[in-house]
Length: 149
Image 1 (tube, rainbow, N blue to C red):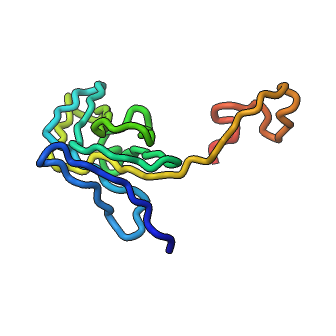
Image 2: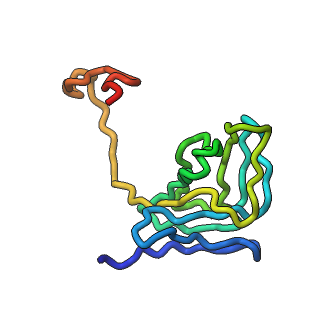
């Protein structure tokens, strides 16, 4: 296996928990709530982690939902949050409660999301005429155009 990528992380609160991996082959590292937070129904709240990170240049951090919370109704409203390599602020996890009941209380120390560290390819955009994009079988078919299965 290649040498592990090092991501520097700083706790700026004594109760902050460092990210942990749920299993040896888990893709993501669990993030933990720093404090109790009530998430009202259909509202989004920023949950504190008490962590700051230095993502290496050429990589991004992707904050993703935990399936166990999503199945209850606590979701990330933006699906995936991106942490850029030059961001040094506290990591927050934006969550929305859409489950049953008026609210969901996230407890301090609860696993609330996962962070994945992913490489960013060196990309350049080249403007061309629409016809120069080439044709595909799908064409301009949009949302749901490839079918359900």
